[in-house]
Image (tube, rainbow, N blue to C red; front, side, top):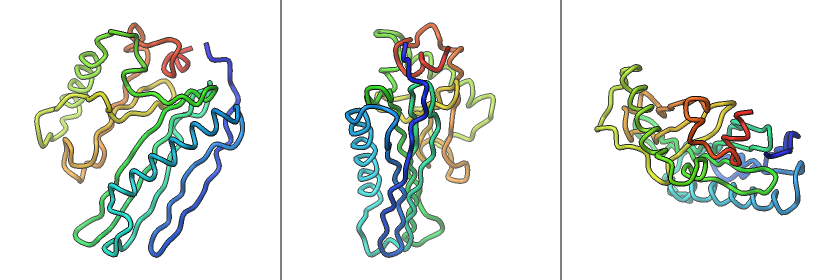
Length: 202
């Protein structure tokens, strides 16, 4: 069980250029220097990837805003989302989102599959829950539900695992990012208790 209870200090670095303002979080204390460095490297790399996917730098970019949201910062778990909005003309801009989840004691980042017990049927379980939510919420799918992928986007918020999909991926743009919150207690039998979801359960 992870013993850390202190909240990590999160600071902001701001990148500015013509019509561009990117706020990037970085961890400054609250854990070992090595863990801070590991998390900050991962955050910086994810931010660079978002910029690249948005085509930055480009003269076509009329406006770009980078923001972030801290989803969990307790019990030795840091889970956050980086968001990048870019406008190049047309009816509306495009927003990309990338989330990262860390063990704050070690700086290790987790993929979705690493939150669960080895060889657990987590994909089938999560897909069934998401499909039930789609039906209950009557979401207007653009395509048949594709199922989650090994690099599926997610974050942890309080005692929930939140799975989400990019804009346009499964629902119309007007619906924004489709989020599917799943209580840790609904999937506790397959959670790795020594991972971030396990830390949030108790």
